[in-house]
Image (cartoon, rainbow over all chains, first blue to last red; front, side, top):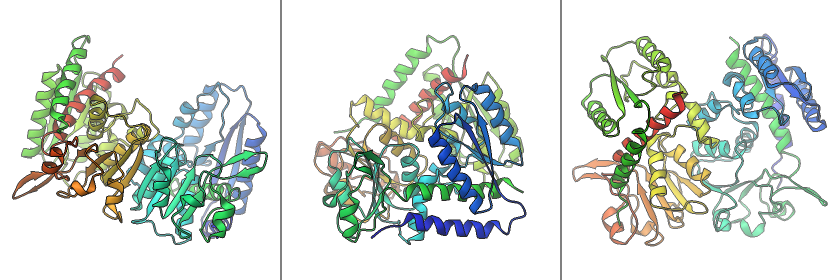
Length: 278
Length: 278
């Protein structure tokens, strides 16, 4: 069975819109863009159109490719204190001459919707609900909520090693009372962990790493955050074709990570509005 | 076999002392104490005597029980910028009328030796080596290093649920490339996890939770961070008597957590000195 992230994203938009129409002012999302690479422009266009859908105002701050770091920091400092644009994101990647770490650290934790700031990551670690949570793991938690998938006491196997998706994911699952196993490419017997899992979350980028033989039974829920691209097209970490026919609840790749991530960006924008507006 | 944390703590003191004697000035550790409770005074006395052992200067800032929060924050702000006392800790517990969260957040992340500040916890999450790591998990990592216990690819089962010891512990182990399972009181079949583990780290405070039948074989390393006190005396989470006779490498309770924690406090003080002195 398909775990339909796209449909859930639409539900989220309805909820966000319903809430925003009662606010005195519209929330406003800013985006800082350096360098006009076509992929970034496409992503920004999608964020802009999502914002429009739910009455979130949008402003783009564009810089040319060779902008110096100081110039960007100046804009960040202005946005940190400007009450009109009260939250914003920095579109990645940045050009090589700019230190991503310096730039992301300059964003005020209160306006760090993407949850990249160490203070937000730390707040997440200690379970502070006011923390901004990076959109992809937050979106996965939303899937569980909307599909009424209980986490307390569940065995969950998380495979992968990225800071953005995966460590915050672990913390959220642990805070929810799950028994969580974190596996990576060094794991000696991956099957032992996946076969014991009620839920598998894979974010490795290794095509078809998870097949039917890795799965305990057709009740196992499979969240595929993998993305692989080769001559046959786009695929995830899991053998979707076989597994979804087995009645396993599974997310299709492509088709859910990005819609859920953008929807959660809008939800975080609304959260930022409530936190930063008096 | 006993994994002798006390002996390793002494080795650490020798290393710290050897390094400090070549410095131009001595590092200096400050302690803020509110409320003269006897346990706190005893802990401080031990920290002071450890500092003396390794040429770390020490200063105590004492406040009476009914001090107002503003007064404490004033002192913290002073210490944050005072170059003479360039790092300090706040002795817990604080009286009920003082918000622990507010106080700990006021400490500059650069002087947060205990690693309680969300920014240090976040830096730990993203694997930044400049982060201060809470002393108990840092001490456990030091045990592994000193005993030459390799972590990459190992199956490690961590049982417990405290923010201070256990979540930073998970992050450190994951950053080291281990496969880590985080279990808690909701875990359905704990034995399945412990019996698959090369290393068990238990921090539950549940007497003798881990017995011989939880352990794969006599090669399993057991780190007992539990502390239980009843009419028979002090015991850990693990059945030490049986397990250490089996040739399992195991830490005795009591006798290692506190000595290692204090030794790591001194090591962190030295790290803070290097980071903050210029």
